[in-house]
Amino acid sequence: MAFAELGEQLREIGRRLQRPFVVLALAALTIYAASGYIGQERAANQLAGEVADRQSQLDAAMQERDTLTAELAALHDPVHYGQYATLVGRHTLLLNRPDETLLLVTWLSGNGQPVPPRPTDWKVLLHAANIPTP
Image 1 (tube, rainbow, N blue to C red):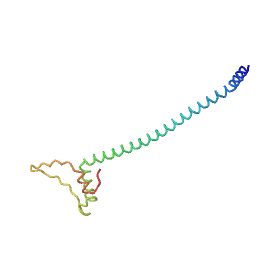
Image 2 (image 1 turned 90 degrees about the vertical axis):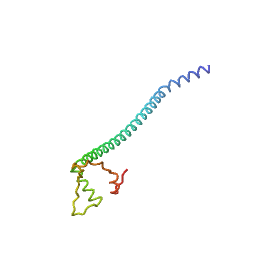
Image 3 (image 1 turned 90 degrees about the horizontal axis):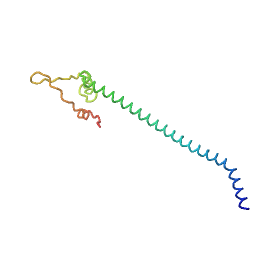
Image 4 (image 1 turned 135 degrees about the vertical axis):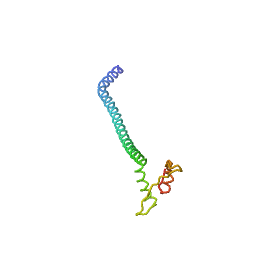
C-alpha cells in the first residue's frame, strides 16, 4: 500500500509540475531562437557594412581608372602631349628658363617624310625626373 500511495503522490506532483515545465521549455526554446536570430542579424549587418566599404573602394578605383584613361587618351593627342612635355620640361626637368619656350621637333627622314614616333620609355623619363615607379 505504501507504494501505491507513493505512486499516487508522484503522479500528483507530475500533474502539478507538467504545465510550468512546458511553459519553461517553451520560454527556453523562444530565447534560444531569438538569440540565434539576433546573432544572424548582427552578422548580416556587419557583412552589409563590409560590402558597402568594398563597393566604395571599387567605385573610387573605377573613378581613378576613368581619370587615368582620360589622361592617357589626352597624352595621345598632339596638343595635350605638347602641353604635358612643356610642363615636364619646365617644372620637373628644369630644361628651360622662364623666358624660353620649349619646342617639339618632328624629325624628317632622308626622303622628307616624318620619322614615325618611337614608343616613349616612360620609366627612363620618370627615373630622370626622380619620380618613383612601382
